[in-house]
Amino acid sequence: MHILYLTQWFDPEPNVVKGVAFVRALEAAGHDVTVVTGLPNYPTGKLYPGYRWRLLQKEMIDGIRVVRLPLYPSHDTSAVRRSLNYLSFFLSALVYCLCRRRSFDLAYVYHPPITVGAAAALAGLIRPLEFVLDVQDLWPDTLASTGMRGGATLGRLLGPVCRLVYRRAAAIVVQSDGMKRALIDRGVPCAKISTILNWADVPQLPPLRAAREQGPFTIVYGGNLGRAQGLETLVAAAALIERDRSDIRLIIYGDGVESEALRRAAREARVTILSFQGRCSSREMVTAFSEADALVMHLTDQPLFAITIPSKTQFYLAMGRPIVAGIAGDAARLLHRAGAALVVTPGDPGVLAQALRAMAEMPAAERTALGASGRHFYLDHLSFERGMHDTLQLIERARTRPAGDRLVPA
Image 1 (cartoon, helix red, strand yellow):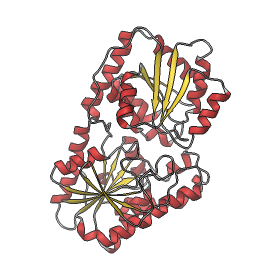
Image 2 (image 1 turned 45 degrees about the horizontal axis):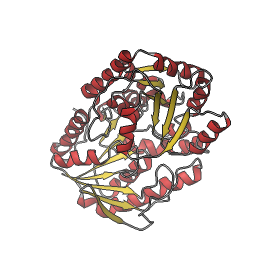
Image 3 (image 1 turned 90 degrees about the vertical axis):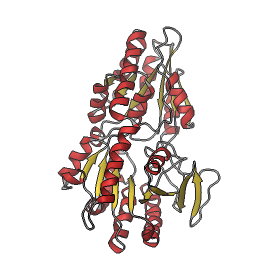
């Protein structure tokens, strides 16, 4: 089957849940895949070196055929500029789908943003092309929850667009049962929705290692520095820890719209145990995580995030390190099931600081056990192999369905 993989984000952009490894697995199963994506600009909103605005750009990434379409690069807090970013790629994708529809048997559409799904849905009204919608963020809820200026208004305008895309999609993949319940509440047929939990996009897992008995205790955060992460809570927690613990080190890797604000907050609070290392490669990130004594994650306390499992949850579990998490909802329940984390209420610097101290004071054997429990849970329930098996089954049903049938989960 010739599959169009339509996604606004793709390698070399970071935090792409279904990137090169995903496409390779589709091709290993016998499918011919073309990735159609935008010019890389996430998370800074600036085009990556080596790329420039042009009508169409073709390249090969690790043997994968990639077509890049023009877009307006932006990833800041302005609703106008972000709208231009989404709409520009929507128009590019719509034109591409209309012109190249006959080249593909099925489209696999990665959402966010919902405008990518809208391009597939509208193109399908003119030249039929079945598509599977992979929902990683629930729109329009996400726009209202991230603090983007004008996000709530933009979200209301996008409500009808979301309903059109859900209705036109042959099947919908969601990354949590909470998202599935939310879509059912919005009238999407249950039979159309499959929950396929995300995995960590890591070519090779680092070896499990025992916790260190001595030395500075290093806690690492890695990922996007955006409004949704609420990392001002981590900065404030570091300031509290520094009052009585100079042997704890917190390191933040990553970039995003809140990067400068977080650095400024750390300077103003005169926090010396916290450092910022900027964005790094996936390989460097794996090394930093695997060598840390513990990992920390945080999400703001928003209703949407109660049904969202951020991709770093799986990534952290795969690293085999103990976790401190200021998080609620489905992600918190997953971490409790894994037996790998100290989970606390998000948004409270004092509670987070207490949990980070508790992790540093925990006997090494207990920390080792937490990390090992997380790795084993990941391999049993969240691995790449398990997720791809479920995805390929869904695509195979698309291959064998009678003409005119809708693609629904078994």
